[in-house]
Amino acid sequence: MPQFVIAPPPQAVVPVTGRDAVFPVRRIYCVGRNYAAHARELGNDAREPPFFFQKPADAVVASGSTIAYPPATQDLHHEVELVLAIGVGGVDIAPGAARAHVFGVAVGIDLTRRDLQNAAKAARRPWECAKAFDASAPVGAIVEWPATARLPTSGRITLDVNGVRRQDGNIADMTWGCAEIITELSMLFRLEPGDLIFTGTPAGVGPISRGDTVVGEIEGVGSVTLRVN
Image (cartoon, rainbow, N blue to C red; front, side, top):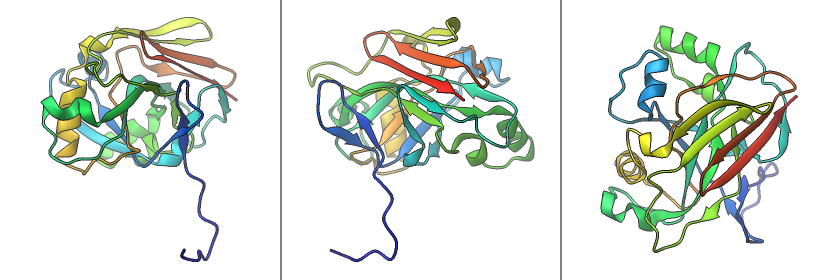
């Protein structure tokens, strides 16, 4: 075993429903503007090729956590998303083979410092400061997906803030489906076990404030809950 000059950081993990073992997180990939209505509400074309950005693995936050309102923003937004958990690695994965690479699915929230994102877009700069900050990736427990079941193609996806419905859509409305996302992403990066893929959010994104309780749910998948302090 190598000797480390400093203590190595703890492994980011997500619980798995019905299991004592946990899912180790390697990388977090996110798909931008993958619902037509959400793309339109941000002033973008409703049908464009998928594009990706990343969050660090240690941005993961367990469901039920209380997080601090992040610094350097006055406009923190919620974006509820279906999350794919990769269990088998691969590159140049064909759509028909994508199912075999997915261990399970979960509900996630892509927290976004919208004011920083808008400034980055205007200056044609990267989005890391807007998307990849601490505690920006709350994820509910992963549901191990049956090997015989196809990847989710429909199911109501919602998000409530303090009991008030903000987002209400269906994953059937994704511009690029789960298998297509895996295919496109695997042509850019070699996917490995432990990768999480946030697949985009429906319309209705909006601000959250200190004291808010946020609940995201996907029919047949589960939920994720957090409180902002």
